[in-house]
Length: 329
Image (cartoon, rainbow, N blue to C red):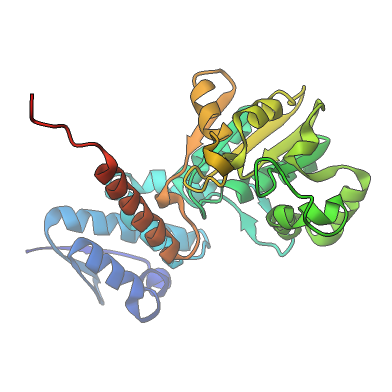
């Protein structure tokens, strides 16, 4: 067993170690090391390769604390998983990015390298597909980017859309007028805008027509100029709907298409427009496809474990469904 001593500024020790040393216990379990705080420094014991990774995580946590960032369980887990292969400098790039402030004064920024890549692509391209599981911030970050572009006068309006629960958008059985019928399906978009922009400002912009939240069917026959358009839940579009949407985009506009291909609700085995479009449009300039993974999940740590469990289950199921080749000639 080897030992290495590192120095961390005393003012950050409590944040680095966490309540009841919970951060250190995570590191010890993850890398099979022992970490002890002494008067003359922090002693890390274990195999050299494990010590080096644990040391990188400790430095990353310290740097995060130094920048005034909150050190939560998601961040610790992310550092543990990513710093096995990446440098502290790469990880810290995330903390240097900033999109906007919520109405309550909380900064909105990418929390993973995957999210940073996603927001960078949105800044630099006209059309971006954000594909990944629940909890990776696909929609929320797109909304934050839309609000920022609107406030900076880069666009004149924000258009948010998603297919209603079915791709065919069969809403006739629901009570109320059309707006009341579609509101439940668009509620997640409203909630995100309320948090980022504030309910009063949101309502004023809705009344002025500067913000439009509508089902995908409303996009047909329109040309959308000088707009930031977010298509959410795009896995539930048909290929025809996706083509219709993509050909609405006009001059001075930007579009972000988000979806989770593991949660397709299309009836009768219909093909997903999201899956098809990401195959057709690969390699076209000014169109980028960003795939987020379970490493980019920023919800409760249990969500990441649930996604992992489902991925393993689906892989096993797919393997068992493959036909076994006969050895008989």
